[in-house]
Length: 278
Image (cartoon, rainbow, N blue to C red):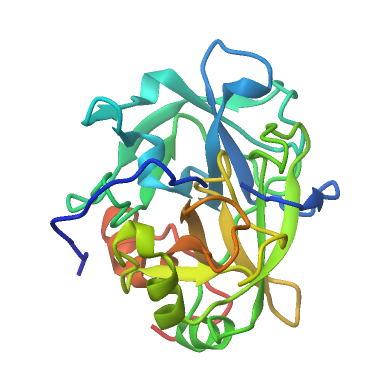
């Protein structure tokens, strides 16, 4: 069941990037894609990130397509015809493989104000050839994996091309590690968002400023673990935060495990498991 939350107040200080990350090695994050504006070149073509879960499907954040314009107090829509998916590269300026979007599925209860149910499925206009050009899918978590990798203090990986500490979009894909935070502590810490950290969200990051974090431009990218055999397990989707690497505040991620039923209802056989128990 999807969670709807009412009576939220939006603020200006909501951002989403991998702050103080490092360049990802070639092929290190082959499930990462970028959503870029069609017919636009350069680093500023970036809209956000996405995650390969199937040869025709990408999982990402809903607010890449329906976002809240705080200045004019309205929701604006970015349609499938405005964006393409850049895949198979760590270099944002490598435009060799852009793929069109066939359709976008967003939860009916998605709220752009507050980023509730911030998840989306994107169907590609053509199939990816997995296993070549650095493209492969990431695995969904089964119950045991989810509970294991969401324990407080567990280090998880994040990646994206978003702004660095100088507010610059990165040409090369950045990767870093962040620890899972206590949910109650996170809820209380994000006071400027009126404690709207809900059960369909995960918190990760460092309590003190200066550590690795996600920030603007990283939205839709993965929060993931690697199991003992090196299989990537998707735990979260970069969603929102207050500032970047701010003292006492954490990055907020959509809890993928919470949405497994929704994904399966809209995209049969898209999710893959190393050892499903659900």
